[in-house]
Structures are given as structure tokens and as C-alpha cells.
Amino acid sequence: MSRLDLYVTRAGVQFSNRRFACTIGRGGFSADKREGDGATPIGVHRIVGMLYRPDRIAARRLPDWALPIRPGDLWSDDSKDPDYNLMVSAPHSYSHEALRRADPLYDLILITDWNWPEATAGRGSAIFLHRWRGPCHPTAGCVAFAPQDLLWIAQRLRPQSRLIIRG
Image (cartoon, rainbow, N blue to C red):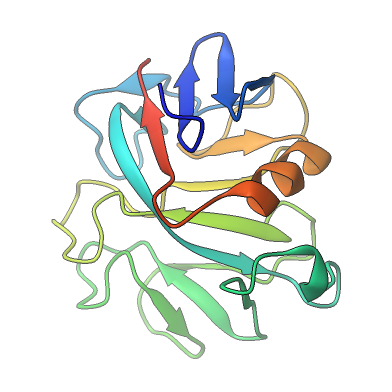
């Protein structure tokens, strides 16, 4: 076990010699992830990016590789879109998810390499680590944390850190 990796099991997440509560997708863990199934994909996923709301989190609290979420930033979740499972900008004619939300769920996002950057249509888009709605409130497939835990994790990630989902 590397202290730099996040290990996800039914009991929570182990990272940097600490254990954190988390929520996963409403579809549970899956070795055969599909778009819209609500499942969290089992496997080893690199953490390839970090986005944050600069009007809600000060940049000085995050690593220098974190990028601000701007108005109009979206994530394509339409498998027919040539930019499927990529960050895009408004206006965007395909189905997408707004990254700059009214609620705080995406104030801080850690992006994994699930089905990225060369996406296979229908395998599922955007497995993020983000803020939870609360304990026991499942996600659409992402891994979610209490806000203070997510920030603590984000501040300690390294380029070689991975998300390892055991199920």
C-alpha cells in the first residue's frame, strides 16, 4: 500500500495513513461500468486534474496545479458527442453537466482518468472525487467526501497518486 494512493472499499477510503468516510455511486461498485448505471468503476485510476471554484475556495489552499472552474465550463456526458467525457465550454449542443453549480458539490473536483482521454462511447463519463450531499447519499458513480476531508486529501495529493477502487 502506498501512502500516496487512495484505496476505496465498502468501509471507506484509506489515504496517507488515515481513513475517511465516503459515498459511492447508487449502483454500487462495478467491473463493467456503463453510462448512466450510477456505478463506481472498480480498478486503478490516475488522478489527472483538480478544479475548484475560485469564488468559494482560495487558490492558496490548493496545489499549484489546481485550475479554476470558470462560468461556462461543462463536462460532456453524451456518448454521441465527439468531445464525450471531456471538459467543454458553453454553449454546447450535446448533453453535458455544468461544472459551476449553484450547490457546493463541485466546489472542488479531482478528475480521474476513467474512460479518458480517449473515451469509449457508453463506458461512462467523469468519475470525479467531489463533495458529498451527506453521509449515505449516493452519487451518480463518483466518490464523494465531507468537504473538510476532500480539501485535506486535495492538499496532499501528488502527481503519482491514484484512486484504487476495490469494491
